Length: 437
Image (tube, rainbow, N blue to C red; front, side, top):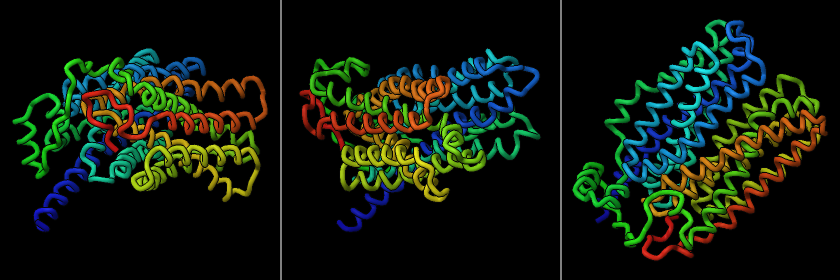
């Protein structure tokens, strides 16, 4: 029995490591793709062939966000209806090819169209990677594995900044953007190694395929998911069934408020810190500290959540993040300021990642990718609102402290919103499995 148990545990950990690694690669590629535009935008605006004005540059940047709005919704539902692996492959191919085409775009309009499709692929793969990582995580380690997987996004953004810093002046912005297409060479590896979701196969009554896959991976089959006769197909209506409305509302509000903080600070942090009296060099480095701390801090938060529960961990992280953001309104010694920026990154980006992890495990398997994808689509409104709020404050000459106050308030709002989500197993629609935690 001990040997069999050891073999079973080894198979679980091997499969989890494989799935987490492949999903990390996707998130890293997406992070690079999304970070590349911000990193090369100054170079693009000085390109005499395009002669971009700030308004056109802003529209080009927003094209990816619009694509994310549609991609999260469409591909999340697609994954729950047709399979996680096919949806993963489509999204991975889409944003890789779109990045390559964007690098060759002859005009700002074509570039924006390519960015739209890249954004759709980026948003589409997040719910798929979320569902697969949480499903194949070892018992009690779903949050930690999810945080490891999602750290690829922040590291990808940082890699884009490094690549731009080292090569944009002598190789040009097209080279930096085009590197995002290199991920396509990994498609054969992903096709061969990424397993389909066992939960999905079971929910579709594809039992022979599920047994064969479980045998190949050395895993036990999951319990068959109970389905009511009148259970709706994956879609928005399913998420608002009686018993899930409060949870759906809580997740949506938490991601909306969280994205206000994340995208607001990602866009305006260097400029805000310059306005607060810091030199240009440290002001730029604050953004790097913000991103790196969030990638490492997310793993720590995931470990805490596996022991203390997601809701309390997320609430505490957002509140601590809000305090750090407010503290940045004062001028501190540089080392302390870096520490506060790091805490703000953990209490915003890392906490927002934990919300998605919580969501990915809350709903039954057949609605999991739908729940994450639709929520990500809704959160795009927050992603757009954050930079707009910072721009409104700057445009109207308001005091710099307003930035910190508004983003801190949004972080508190995210923490309070997650408390609307009922405890696991409560208020679950009849005929469905209790939410997994």
